[in-house]
Length: 82
Image (cartoon, rainbow, N blue to C red; front, side, top):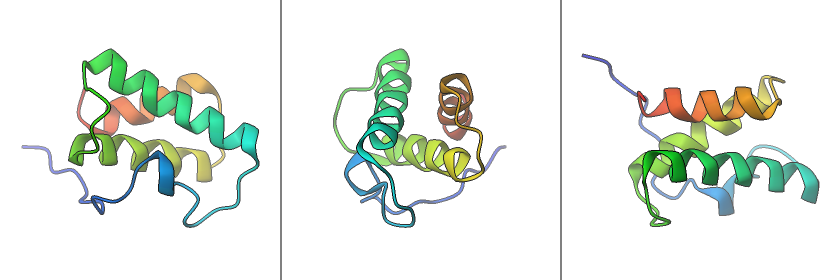
């Protein structure tokens, strides 16, 4: 059984700047990656725990310096075990 880290339910595209400063282009890139993963998995735009995990995985990867779109999407997919 794989356990995924618990993230605050309020973590979504609107709160990704909590721990980092982003310019509008960087923020848009992260939001596009979140939307791409949600769309690929068939999630709607509702804010739920899966979306929060995706956002957490993507922002964590961004902070680590792995900022290519493929890395961001892979991190989002890994965050929900897809």
